[in-house]
Image 1 (cartoon, rainbow, N blue to C red):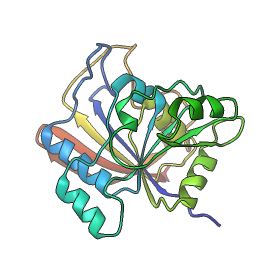
Image 2 (image 1 turned 60 degrees about the vertical axis):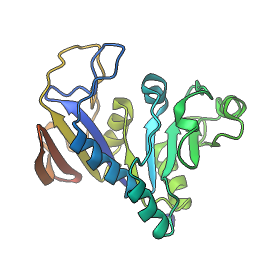
Image 3 (image 1 turned 180 degrees about the horizontal axis):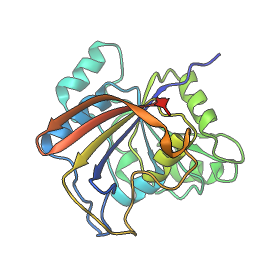
Length: 227
């Protein structure tokens, strides 16, 4: 039986739960020290996953930036960069985006109706896999497990965080809480409306809390809930 990856949801959010504001420019919620923490977490992961909407909006490279951390990965027999993964139902991706042209291997999960569209668009830039007529997160994790991914870092966006939390597939949640208030209902939030396991009274276990300059970092264990 395939062992699924250990799934970590990673996000920086405002005190009122937003991942960004509604302006065209990306809102930087973390500080330099916290960005370095994220870089370390990426280096410790076998794969990093973000949604296609986040790729289109933010155009990230999604790299391990530290040369020392990349060298350490290589010394451990790993690729310099973790596998970069995205998911798309529509197949609306552009081959010009930074995601495809930096780092190591890339993998796209999509559905049957979009698989040929994605393969035509990306050509040799990424491996493209369909998980069936609908996007099934269990099948996504099964395939990542078959590919040797033991630790998966999920960096958003909010729709993906919501789906994985609602399906009880997140093993840890890493939150960097910035001392900012966004207050714009049209802006992206960390989590949306969903039927979460255990309901509104289920309390997650806290694994760690620490201050990183003006950001508060919290680690939760969603699967260790108490009534």
